[in-house]
Amino acid sequence: MNSKPIGVFDSGIGGLTVVRALTQRLPHENIVYFGDTARVPYGPKSPQVIREYAAQDVEFLISRDVKMIVIACNTVSGVALDVVMKHAKVPVVGVILPGADAAVAATRKRRIGVIGTIATVNSKAYSHAIRLLDKEAEVFSRACPLFVPLAEEGWTHHTVTGLVAKEYLFPFKLEKIDTLILGCTHYPILKDAIRTAVDESVTLIDSGEATAVEVERILDEKKLRNPSQLKPHLQFFVSDLPAKFSEIGERFLGQKMGRINKTGEFHL
Amino acid sequence: MNSKPIGVFDSGIGGLTVVRALTQRLPHENIVYFGDTARVPYGPKSPQVIREYAAQDVEFLISRDVKMIVIACNTVSGVALDVVMKHAKVPVVGVILPGADAAVAATRKRRIGVIGTIATVNSKAYSHAIRLLDKEAEVFSRACPLFVPLAEEGWTHHTVTGLVAKEYLFPFKLEKIDTLILGCTHYPILKDAIRTAVDESVTLIDSGEATAVEVERILDEKKLRNPSQLKPHLQFFVSDLPAKFSEIGERFLGQKMGRINKTGEFHL
Image 1 (cartoon, rainbow over the protein chains, first blue to last red):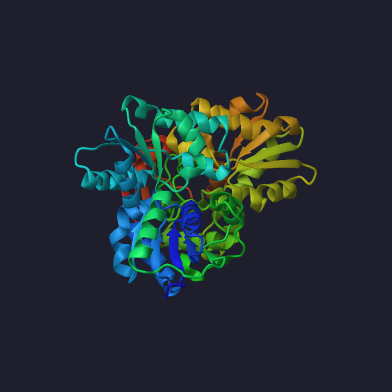
Image 2: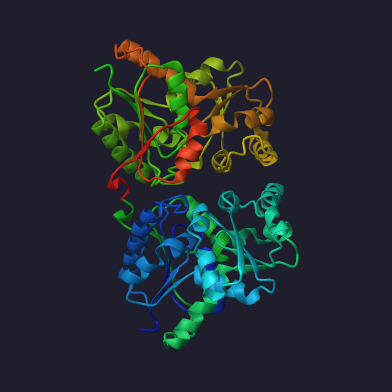
């Protein structure tokens, strides 16, 4: 049982930053990743459609016999956590609750900023999660639609990225936040530009890293840790296979990806 | 028969710039537009997937009893024109051939630039179409992935857009093109920034406008023009209904859109 893989899914490529965080914290866990590249991005889609897609994504991971499921997608975690829990017979972790938890632990002024896709921000998932943990916390949210294509272009240290970050994040200065949640799995790639655009004292919360901490806690609680000390097996599946996936993916993952498998007629 | 609508489809919202060009040139034609917003964007997807989606998009328009089909999407026109023609029993016009034709007519130095999505550029559809018309023409192509999100953000005259355009289009100066095809239906929205980034003497070809000219020619040739002089009926269908569609759409269309209809379970 314990050598079974952890299943991780995302609408596309961004979830690989969560896989990176998982492999750093849990270097002996096997992982099966599914990126729904045929239907990416989920961000601009309606909650109803996202919930249908999420159910199908989970079915795929379940068919790979995973011991746990990580929703490495803020959009899905925000609008379809219940759907995933209903379809999975294994523990489920989304990125929203761990991210909210880490932010509440980090803030001193109880003024927290959240950035993400339009869908994530509109879902108010982070605000609700934060308010559950701290009724008094003030949450300021902002969608940053250009960050995903900038991360995919690899313009991590480009003047343009600096200007875009400054424009999107400027209002947070007036709102005097002291903690900012990177509420989209692409955003850690742009961490340097984001850091420069907010006050130096602001703590950046990478939801992927916070999620890896939560995954470790659950594995220990349920006694599901892989006892093997060997190099783990990482498998990557996508519903469509643009060259782009491996090209950009290795930058997101921080290591070579090896073979990428294409699922069957899943995307239709 | 002639009062039947022209069917227009796109992966999402960009095709509305083609509808705008059509309504300007053919102000009495009824139009049914379908935007596959549940699966947008097609640009990064594989040709095989795009062909499957295109076949479904055409089926939808055929079910609306259209007299003609306009593929208002460069990506689909580039990789699936044959699929659309096979499924449609009515005349079909894509945006690639009219755009290539207009560019060949405009160039004096026979040096033509093409900008589009990664899929359009990789398909080499414009290069092939131009070479069919003029074997000696030299074609220089470049993907501009940030232009679509910039157009959707509405940053048409933003410093950032100017910088991005300068970076993407600078190599065309060295290549000494005199004509540039806007090979993506979003790009007319950024025409001013694009114009500033290339030499003033470069002729910009809006494939949507070129397509409207070709549609008019076919309507006349087949005697399919709508004889009515009344205000035409424009109908809009999408496979998913984010608020974004009408919000951004009116800017693309250049007029109010009225009711937007959602198709059934088409997106699954």
